[in-house]
Image (cartoon, rainbow, N blue to C red; front, side, top):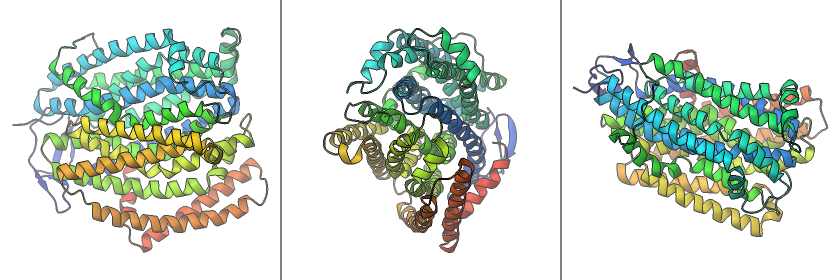
Length: 572
């Protein structure tokens, strides 16, 4: 008899009329505790609602973090240097720890939990932990030692107005965070496999709070005077904050995994069959799961070109962060829940239920990302002015950032959809397909960026890299969707298209109202409090129009969103 994730005999399952999986006995065991078993739709909403709330808090803290960066550095050469130094190790962390490693580890670990005794599964996780620790430690040390060479690789098109020497210095401070954030991501993946989502989601809140503390005046008055001559800038304190936040992210999760039986005594074993399987899966998934981040970093490379205006790197970073507010709250929350859930379904052979879970998740996420994309495109300047035009962040900085945000927002639904469709392949332990699709998408990004830089830089300016990423994301999702449907059968494309059509109609009405609201914004300058109030009013009225239209058009997703909100009060 197969065993579930807690080591207990698995229960027989049946399909309800909607295609979601139900237990015949009506219960299951999660993390050693019996709980009621819901349809997959209910499980996704129940868990994702908690992750979404915590992630929303994190994104608010992330905004405060980015506001501190903008306030202290604006879009100056020092700001470009800090963003470049921060993005290099962050790219490695997201591609390996937060992307490829999690996508490779969760399907294999859930298989161990289902088919083997719990102690054996935890010993396997222990080996993976220490193998990853050794590899990331080597990468972290090498990245700090060879900081000059690392930064040179990512400024192939020239330094532009970036303070290259400062970027090297900051990268040397930040790079060791690769070890701690990578291990934190692995521990998060293990906890997610036990259906524990709240604590791992909260780690980013802690990271942002630690960073904000290091951005305060006392911190850089204490840290900056000890920096090397010529590098005494608040950016040094911010770099130290990144490293301290990474350590905190890792440390706060270790006790939770230890309580579930995980031992952290050294156990390096690169020859273990399970470890080798993760290694084989992880190689291809470096592109598949990480192409989103790689494409954004490609934007950074092209933004360093001397043909780009000063501040392009920092402005694209802020635009990206504004888009992440939506992606992180909904798409990332649901995809976090989706991968371990679909991995369990794939292990049990429940492929129809897996496809139903994907279709439902895509509709719910699109119900938010489509109007969010339209809203950001229309209200981009009021949003940036209200949230960031303080201190060193000037009106010129607002113009640069608003342009980048417009083109990033075009691709918002596609960016979100990729986060949901990639787990379909990883759940069936197919990392090769997203890898080569990701490689094609990266090639498309480079092609688009090159064409925009050579022929349209006068018209697009710093918006060119953002538009290239949006187009590449649309291509990436379309090809993945086509391939999955071809191999595994229909996934409800017709019903999805009908739902998307309703969302676009509702979104068009919302965008029209928001556009009319811009006339009040353009009527004159306002105090920051009045600005915030006016912007909030425009957003509330526009959102009311969207949800009102959704009710009139009987969008099924409106009721499902209410379930998502209600589920936020329950523990996942």
